[in-house]
Length: 360
Image (cartoon, rainbow, N blue to C red):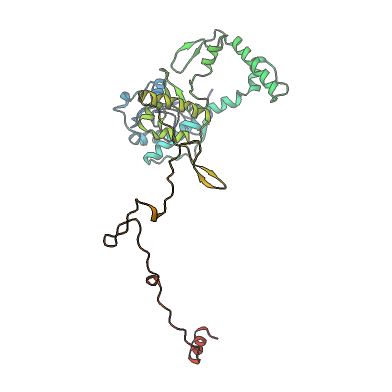
């Protein structure tokens, strides 16, 4: 089938250092420009990202840092890429959410003009997801051949989910599946443990997927500036990151798993360190008496009050050295302020002056 095109349609795909659009970089871009006459032009660029590539990304697309040593940086290749797709609309798979924003980020980062205002964008994934919906109702119709009665009631949806799973196990028994690494298997079998592994391909540490396991069973951060790094390595390089996450707006289960990893990290780092003594109990406050010590804690010994004149330990004051326990009283006449001047009687001159000042 031939597409009706008024101008070229550039299908493109990116391989990157990771999936964080604001942080990660392009390592490869491939473009197939489909022309209105049915012909096509193909170009592929390897790009030096000037930053490390996460091992998870390299294992997916097969591009490692040593492959890009002699590759140009994006700033060098930007003009050639821009010229090749200058008059084209853009198309891709999940391109609206990832490839186009990532490409624009690269152009903006190096200051190269690339106008997208007058272009059309076609995201093939969106057509797929909208025409082949992935709702429970669609799954029940596809696998079981019937509609859900009383849809969105808890019991009806639960029963439909159960029937869908039974139908999936029957339908896909012995069916081959190929993962992102090209490994083929028949993963949908009548076994709960096997189904668990297949439905958790990302191998998350927490349900929110903020951390994932790598192939060695080590926890990696799956978001932000430390995406793809071992959690323990981040604790070592940036200890405050743990506090930031524990005080941040993260799910409680994520914080629980993070705390477990942190305690294990500390135990490995300081295996012989004794447990820290508990902090002293806080002072309790009584509404009637104000601040009072906690009666459950040992209290300092109180000494009986001894008046100064009966205290044998009292040192007499020596005025020459200005030392001693008590200075003599200051005589009252030494602190007496100067006497005020005697008030003058009001006369006509004073009244005239007041009248001139206040206008009355």
